[in-house]
Image 1 (cartoon, rainbow, N blue to C red):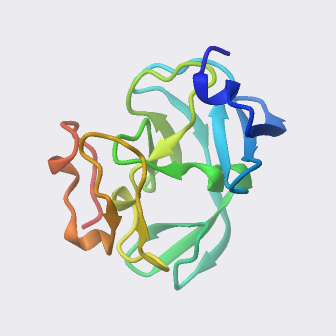
Image 2: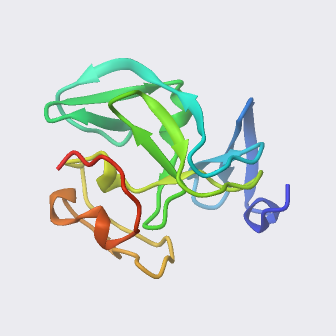
Length: 157
C-alpha cells in the first residue's frame, strides 16, 4: 500500500475485512477504515443493513430517514470517519456504499456527515484539512453539500 498515512508509526492494523482494513491510532485511540483494493468513482463496493434501529443518533449511527438512525452492519463501516472532502457515499435509500472519487488501496474511507445526518449527538471540531473544511461541525441542517463539492447526490434535507 502506497499511502503515507499507513506508513505513520502511530497507526496499527487491527483487523482485515476483505475490501477494508481497520486501523487504530496508538496516540489518539481513534479508529479508521482503509481500502485494501482500489475503487473507481461511481463503483458500489459494499452493501450494508441495520443491525439495530434507533430513534436518536449516537456516535456510530447513520440516519436513514427523518426519524430513524441505524447501527451499521457490517459494523466495521462505523469506522468510516468524516471529511469535508469525502471519498465515499452512504446511499441510505439502497443501503449501498459507493466511491465518489477514485480510491487507492490504502486510502482511508471518509464520508461527509451532512450527507446523511439531520441531527448529531454532539458537534465537533473538524481537522480534515480540506480547502473547504467546515472547521466546526454543527447541526447538518446548516449545510448544503452543493457548497462543498460539485456532484449530484440525493440529499435528505
